[in-house]
Length: 160
Image (tube, helix red, strand yellow):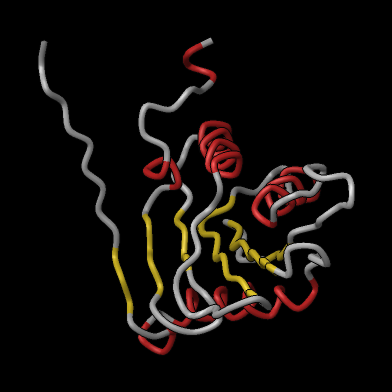
């Protein structure tokens, strides 16, 4: 038997004003997108914005449904929109933010398990990493160089 270890590194920035302008703009779009989310049940409004390799940006929000768990997370709405509307372009960076109406929104938020799997699948599809900017409406920002880092020992198309 051998012991294996998984290590994961990320960057942390204290304030949006310390980000490069392209990242700050993308995060601002994600934060603004939270206002368009449909979250009448959880009151947890999530916005995501993507920078495509052609320089365009798109945003998406979570969409809840009374027939729980039929809702969709902002990340998966964003990936679907990008794949459908911009199939010839690849996502370079995704910014994710949230507005928690039941509490604070001042620390980074991380994608759920299904979104992590979807992000991994998207990275495999485009054959390149997708950077993530994770944040609340205020506070620290976490920068992860590849979404795949969030899902160690993952299951992917390579396993099929």
